[in-house]
Length: 336
Image (tube, rainbow, N blue to C red; front, top):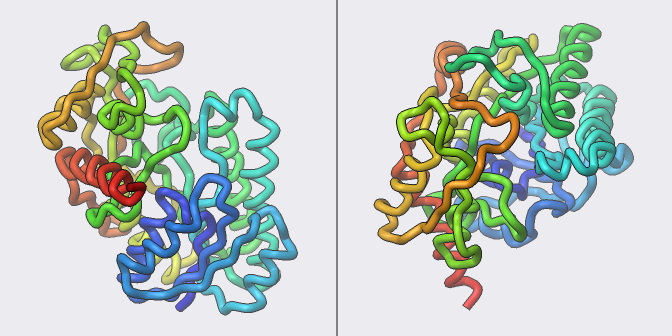
């Protein structure tokens, strides 16, 4: 059984490929290395001891996508490919609309032509906009506050319309909260080349002395220590959530949304202090003013994924912190 993984060399996609291969699936990866590196593919092979097909192509290219489907009997797709930097999306919205929505439309058209009707889509908790309460269930009203989130919301609507037009489709909309961590081998993880957008890569760059200090935005929120609370999920748990969703869509038809989160919130300072303790390393930080639009706390209601997919997170904050730093340490050794 062959699963096409778009964006399979990326942070989350690479971990999903590992879980797919270890679960016995045949994997076909497509990636254009816009936000990833070719070496990741060799590391997936090293971790799993298994090989897979790879295509260096852009998912916006319908001709290329058709060739991939022509050359492989694809049973289902996990669609990760897309731009993901919120700040960049605000500055370059057309780039995000064109790529994220365009690549999905090209993929869906190719799937239709080849009668492949099973897809798990990498969505985001950003489709909930600024929720008024937590935990956030899948039934919460949808909105978006930046172009990145809007592309995810539009794609969810597009996939809903696709299912309405043809009930042979089986679609899982996977709404991630905040993925952090890395594979325990230290071979794959997250290490952005520029200033990070997310908390954990920022912490690891400060710990590695690549950045001088961590900026914590606000300490006057209505939380236990005054810093914002978010739902952080270990990337390996997140990858396993995709396997659970894949099993579901292979057996059913319909369209369903699932939160992938722990259902537990950690504050910024809880993450920082646990990282320092677990890894025995200092992370200097300073408190800066709040950012506009940030809210006190934001975490998932994971009940639906537990009931319908049989999925629950297994890894906690210590593993998230330990594995994140282990990957960075191993990366530094490989650079020597």
